[in-house]
Length: 264
Image (cartoon, rainbow, N blue to C red; front, side, top):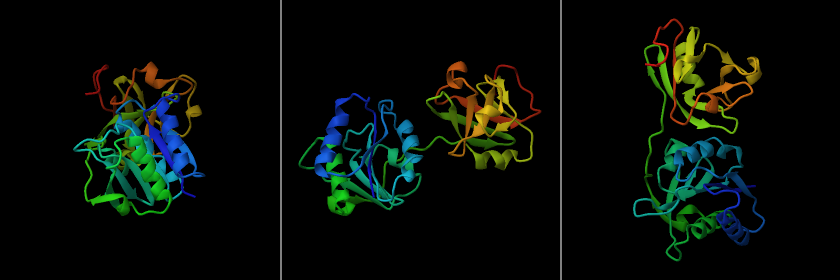
């Protein structure tokens, strides 16, 4: 059975949570409404897109994902229904759909909301119409393109991968944009160093579990998203190494020499 998920900038006690859930409960009673993620940093569509990209496929096909992040409409950023991979996404054309899907969707519709300027009403009504079985094309004007934002990708040079931290989880683990496939394309059967922030902080081993290293020791592992993650067993690596989104991660050959305090 399809569900409706909410990904928002709102704190748990924000009034907007009750407003949209109340509207959805009234318009499509009995439909399961799930908080996919809340309290996302305001206007941070990169953070929101990372969460949605890596969670939506766990929901049943036909589910509807409402995105209330930097969601006010403007002349160049319309409210949309986007259908892709047997799911529906409702939000604002601010570049987030491109970051979520990283491919062309099956259908894009600008929602007709000439009768209201309340975006929560717009999103709730669109979701309830989809739950009722209406086609997206009946709810507005079909268009061909989305506003695009280019995702931050790891770069590969000779014997070197340069990546960035793209997400810090609740435990302070630092998740990078270096995929398992990219890592082993360059370093399979080769000795390597994984360095974070400076040459003083590195490991030359991929762990399977946090407990593979002693408490307090740094490790690198591929998480369930197949992204390279930097952690400290039993501690918050982001806090201890002053990491944040955008911090640099470098992988090079193990015998490479460099100054002690700089990656480049």
